[in-house]
Length: 351
Image (cartoon, helix red, strand yellow):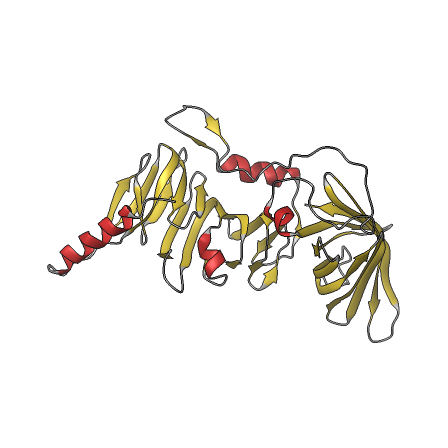
């Protein structure tokens, strides 16, 4: 964490200036990696940022076509800015009973790794764009703003990410003003990691900033959940340590291709926060509310609903060193007459 002396120094300065009727924004973070072309709009002036430059709680951070930066805030939140990006810090309060991080993004690409603010106040972290409000409750995510759209990429989460009230699971993205959660592609992952890489003057080499942890473990024979609890075998991502996992994958039949996701408690096998997205344009694009369980090698999830439709999934589950994998069949029915609307197979894995 950044030394508290930064905050105390800013407070002393503010108290000194109060006598003259002027108070500048306090420092809430500092630059820990950058590439030339990063500025902060502060008190009506553009201030060039460098390594260890302080960042204020009302700064507007801007990068040019070659600029990139990574900012570490007092609560250990990390924000990585790509080129041609603008991010305004509206509220950054790390201490007290109601800590908060509220920022407004005008354009570009930024990646966020949330810190202690989310732990203390889950509703206190948000990022606003021209098209969306992103509510964060513990995660790694990225936002791209441009050409009249906003895309939010959820690369790793231990809890939940809501975009305009829509739950976006790990490994999914959503593009607004119109759109529904869809699985991220390899190109999406490359875009997010590549867009926020920066040069560190200390090393002179380009490196990805704060990548998600790599899972390390010894190969094991896949087992069913009845043989052992679904407890993580390796250190790494947060959900493996906390006993929760996000599972996502594809829905397929002879005509359509869709997607699904749900949250699994790795100890109890309970399934919640299920989302099923049909590839059929005549069926609601996103059905939510799926819940169920994994017992032994059996998976059953139902309760997906949207408009007049309901969805369910049943199949098998197993785990290995890479995590949980699932497969089976799904169906979508019309609630008004009980007729089968769509059916097919599904497959997915822990993300």
